[in-house]
Image (tube, rainbow, N blue to C red; front, side):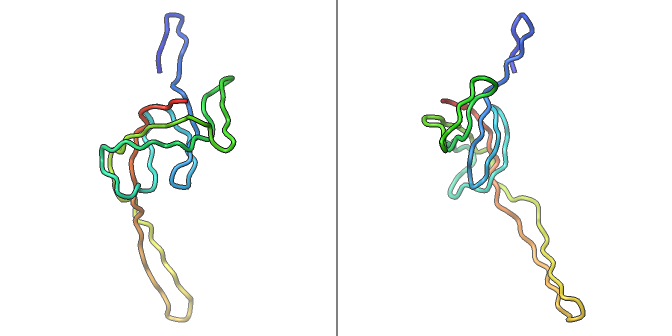
Length: 116
């Protein structure tokens, strides 16, 4: 966010992207959690070319389905595992009970730039 002498506030550009099967609204500098990019390391830069909407206010570009030439660059901060999800199955009066767990592999991304 930047201020000018007349106290006008300028926000960074906003984009709606599609990555890993999910749609997210991002701005420059945002930190987002997505499903893990296979074979990626911390420090790698990812180019996300599936940009659905770009801009804000009167200057909005809407893609059909994607905005041509728009790219969101994001840096992978780390690859980690999410919180554990417990799955408990039970059939009453049958003596059947199963308890399992699952932890999703996640990539933590920092949006570095949004270009059209």
